[in-house]
Image (cartoon, rainbow, N blue to C red; front, top):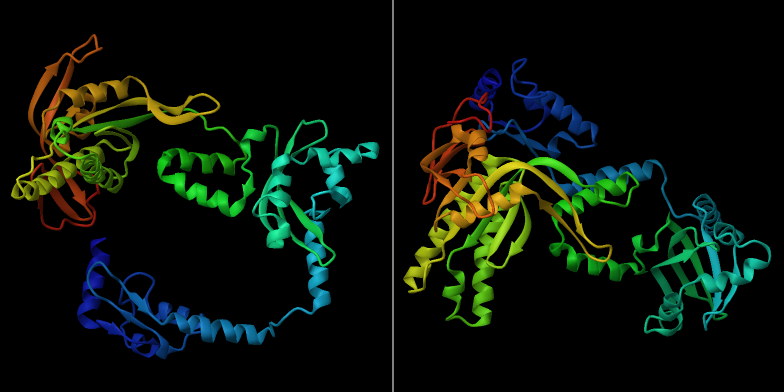
Length: 462
């Protein structure tokens, strides 16, 4: 608020540096912003810091206080002092063994013993019960373990006889009636008697084996890191949300969104004189500019379309800002390309807002998380109609952000595949708030205005 800002400015002038609690006590009552410097000093001392071990700096109107103290203070003095107070030490062997057994019982840990050739010798009763192997059916337990388990642990290059240990191996084992599949995390080692003793911790129980990921966990993590950039970020976030609820399927959603299409004009013609390596390099530079602006403005890339890109935005204004940023970046890039006597790269962008369906498309073997609906098709048609270097939006998008944009001209077009004509707007500039600064952005540059009062909203028109 203005009152709070005035208090902070007064404090900056009167007491720019507060070194410790004794200095803070010299302040008049009520001086300073936020929760008060005296309380900050008391809080730090409550954490185990002495007054000489911290200081608070007030730098400008955007900072009430910044606290500096060495991390070593917290670790060396606070943590070790607390440890000494509670006499923390090593567990005796007997206590550690008892603790392990208690934990094993609590999490229902199973144990299986094999010989070095992979023959199952012994198991705990809870493993048999879990897989419905009572009475004479016990002999079937070895048949339930998949062939890949034996190959990886007793035959392959990572076999226990070679490495001496089994570390974070995941395997799925069906129940005897195959009504369910149980995913285990397996650890173990080779004993002096050349037995392979393993612990089996149940991770989850499902009805469909396809839902489970098997193999060595470190390999699975590496594979996940490799493929992560190829997976739609919204699909990842939605998958985490669904997993927290205990479900295994991504539901379809109907929501309002802004669809953004942009492509490089005449890129195919420009690339004819380039080597394949040069084409990929240039394409990555151009697409990289688009992706960074989309991410910066809270959009999500839905798919790459050769020399084009499709993205989805929750906020139509941010979609337009991203489009203008891309045009600015290309303008700067082309200045360097012209100096090197290389052809300019120009992009065109079409934007449309409306109700879309976000969901899974494909088969059980291969699915794609994407956006579908007439809004997507309309945005693509608008982009195809746009001129090189232009940002064109639909009437629906314009209605939502009309206070923020300057229109160069409007036209009525007959888009391919559409029975009705479309009203579209060629934009000259966009206005928005960046913090407390009003910004006007054109395709060639950006102008920043004066600081506005703190009551101004982020997306209020300038």
